[in-house]
Amino acid sequence: MTTTFDAIVIGTGQAGPSLAKRLAGAGMKVAIIERKLFGGTCVNTGCIPTKTMVASAYAAHLAGRAGDFGVSTGVVSVDMKRVKARKDVISGRNSKGVENGLRNTNNVTVYQGQAKFLSPSQVVVNGETLSSERIFINVGGRATIPDLPGLDQVSYLTNSSMMEIDFLPEHLIIVGGSYVGLEFGQMYRRFGSEVTIIEMSSRLIHREDEDVSASVKEILENEGINVRLNAKCIRLGRQGDMITVGVDCSSGPPMVAGSHLLLAVGRRPNTDDLGLDQAGVIRDDRGYITVDDQLRTNVPGIWALGDCNGRGGFTHTSYNDFEIVAANLLDNDPRRLSDRILTYALYIDPPLGRAGMTETEVRKSGKPALIGKMLMTRVGRAVEKGETQGFMKVLVDAESKHILGASILGVGGDEVIHCILDIMYAKQAYTVIQRAVHIHPTVAELVPTMLGDLKPL
Image 1 (tube, rainbow, N blue to C red):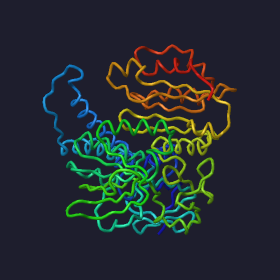
Image 2 (cartoon, rainbow, N blue to C red):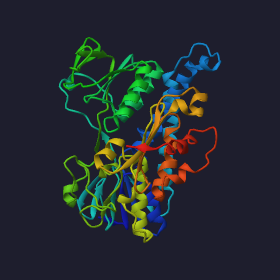
Image 3 (cartoon, helix red, strand yellow):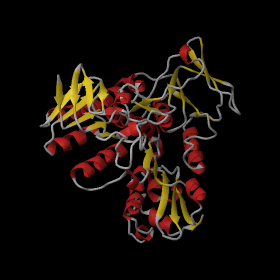
């Protein structure tokens, strides 16, 4: 027996539930399928739980610095069971909210189980065949497990399984010096673990500019995190109860021994068990579903949204995917992926807010450009808070005066970046911000000052 719907949504990450509700509100009969946790990565193992734990780590760090502010706190200790419990409550509330919201939406039928394509218009779940001329894939991604020598000899953690531990690792070794690894590294160092971060390339977060990478490394090392770069031949093993990692770095001991290992070397899409071949949906060599500028796959009537299409990889880009699809289908509004400006944040403390092109990319483009840079030591708000690490940097097209990109590494950087991003979307000259009057004392008030001191790149 086949049940026919006006639309089928596979996955309940950041795009799926909103799209299902919007389609249902337009009068469509919608099926939404979730095989495991409602809300996807962000709600269950990503943004919400990790940033909840980052907040706990910040509280511990600030309490440890209380004397700098003339405040006496006594000995600071961290109860990891309570840290995890707080995280579980906040994450669980969000996940249950997504599920309840879908189950209580008229015209939406929720299925729990693994979905597999039978054809371009049919999927099977729990033995039941569902059919629709519109199918939307929002299945997200998971941690990549690298093929490292000796991996079969050791136990390891990923960003997902890290969410389940309620104890403090004595020495956490993190393989991967990018966004996930750095956030967990600083977090657990602040909780009290010894932490070593191992990165194969010559610098951390290597897609960022070199000055950003160097400053982030300095921030982490100032907190006692061991950073090992140029680890060209990582190999794993055991030495009694300890996990060993051979690193072959250009400097430092050739082996690191720790109590626990976190693999943070990237993400892969959850597209290998959907039966996409049965539908004829094309994926690239990394498994990401190929989509056009409006999220359509090569098969008419099938769209791919969120992390599984390789066109964003963030909660905000996944939600924007929903907005693009809904606008095109329901609003006669031809929104496109190519209208989106790259923006994201690294949630170490202080955070890095990014928008648009890096300095390296601008230089490679050959565009005549201007650059402005300001150390956070010049920002009154940062000085008042005792958080003066980092800097702000902005790149401007010398001819059009439009902002090309910015990096804000410093207190409030994840919020300050938006005043720059909004001007970029408005396609207005940088002088709009430069002549604006911002509130004192804030971090954003120094953005006009920085823009008033641009120099040729």
